[in-house]
Structures are given as structure tokens and as C-alpha cells.
Amino acid sequence: MHHKPDRLPPVPQDAWTPDQARYAQEIIDGPRGALISPFVPLLRSPELMGHAQRMGEYLRYRSVLPLRLSELAILVTARHWSQQVEWAIHAPIAERAGVAASTIAAIEQGRHPLELPEDEAVVFAFSTELHHNRGVSDATWADALRLFGEQGAVDLIGINGYYALLSMVMNAARTEVPASTARPLPPFPDV
Image 1 (cartoon, rainbow, N blue to C red):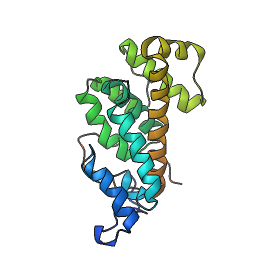
Image 2 (cartoon, rainbow, N blue to C red):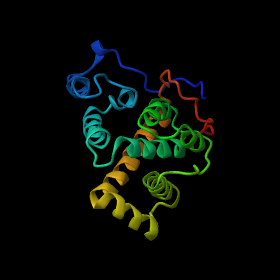
Image 3 (cartoon, rainbow, N blue to C red):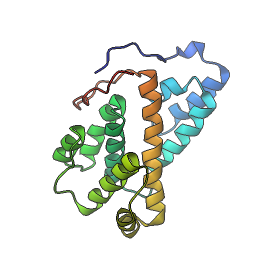
């Protein structure tokens, strides 16, 4: 894990601008209940933070994909970006939602998980292809449509893209990793 200082640490609440306070309060009053890690660096651009949190609230809490599948896509994204905060937050949620510990361990180690249920195999393939190939093969697309429909496929793209955005923000900002039951990902190369 990196030990370099957080570039965009928490801003004391008494130092928030009116825009920061307004957009932060939306997050605090929503299902998250607090200004959690990804939004700490984003607070520097309050309107961007507000738009991001609304997209994330849909993708995390109201997407047509069940929690188990969206959490699996988040883990694939966190591993692709070696994003420690997302991994620390979402690996335990994924396991509680029913993703096998062996699947989580394989993703953590950069291996293809074995013996996945069909829906998880499609989410893993779709998310992996999207990140590594910058697209999705015809076969994987057809499987995603058959299992999740067009809205599910679009929501899956959205989950991968949204968590890639958060990963970029937190990797660039060197956001502090919260305490977690998850083992840290192998560190990403220094940039």
C-alpha cells in the first residue's frame, strides 16, 4: 500500500463554501449517510460531486442489476485500477451479497475466477473486456442481453464507468484507505 500523503484530504466542515455545504448535505441526507471516501476529494468541485453522487446513488441502489452482480463489477473495476479504497469498501459488501470468497480472492490476485454462476461469469467477462479491450465482444454482449436486457447491459456499463471515474479520482488524490476486513490489493506502480 502506498504511504504517500493524501493530496486532497478532508476539508473541515467549518471551512466548506456554501456550494460545498449544499452538495455535501445531499450526500449526508441520502442513503450513504455521510460524506464517504470518494466524495472527500470530489468536494473540491461541488457540482461535479453532486452529479457524480446522483449517478452513483442510482447505480448502487436502484440499478436493475442485483447487488451481488453490481458488486462483482465494482471489484473488477477496483482491481483494474488497483483502487484500494473501493476494494476496501466493496470486497466485504460483495461477499455479504453472495459473491464467493474464492471469486473475490481470484480477482484480488488478478486471476480468472473458476466455477462462477452464469450471471457472474457474464458480468466478469463483460467488465473485464470493457476495461482491458475498451469494448465488449459480440458473444459477451449477447449473453448480457439475454440475462439482463438492454437496461441491464447499459447499467453494467454505467457501473464500470462510474467506478472507473471514482478510481481515477482517488488514485490521483491518493485518498486515505478506510479500515476494512478486506486484504489490500497488491500495490499499483508509483506514478
